[in-house]
Length: 261
Image 1 (cartoon, rainbow, N blue to C red):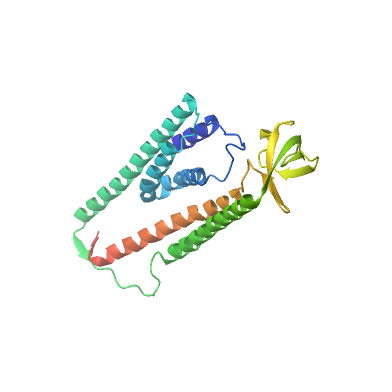
Image 2 (image 1 turned 60 degrees about the vertical axis):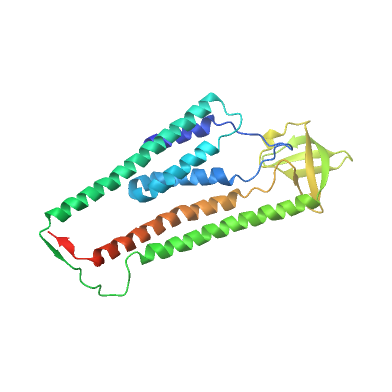
């Protein structure tokens, strides 16, 4: 687990950050957000849910391999390889933990002299109900956040399709805005997520559709919706897995007589 934290931080530090431009606009990166979310979830799943680790670790490894940033240097490739190695060790450790559980269960079964069926439950509550219900609610919230983010992206694209492209010169940079002067001497203040990418005196393209305007290099950013989706999806997946395993184990105990020591 510690190896994954160290290598993931290293890979994030040395990965080149692409700058926004008209030729290569910035925008919501759903793949990277999913990769970060699964990597964060693995820190918990390694300890508590090795079953989920066996699925999530290969998924993160595939994202790391396929999501390499163009123009990355050798150090970035080495860091990504270190992340893959840490994921491989984590996956092998999770597999060994499950195998150890299976061995312990077989030892207990051989040591038991008698077997008995479990008594029928006194109430109607089925084991795993609460985690499954909570997981479904959280996953529904996550799906809603994803849909809201995609809706915002589509709305931004509709405005961009209707917008007039205006060439302007940057005259000032704020913390979250840039001030520009258009060719017809209008002065506009436009929101910017990365104002440091636009030096004073450089030329930018502003898209304008009535009162709506933005930089051509910075489409709608669904980062807030992405964070909400991750914040709901990670515990949602954990609850669903816990509930599913609880249901499966409860059903296994009642299928046949169980060993009694």
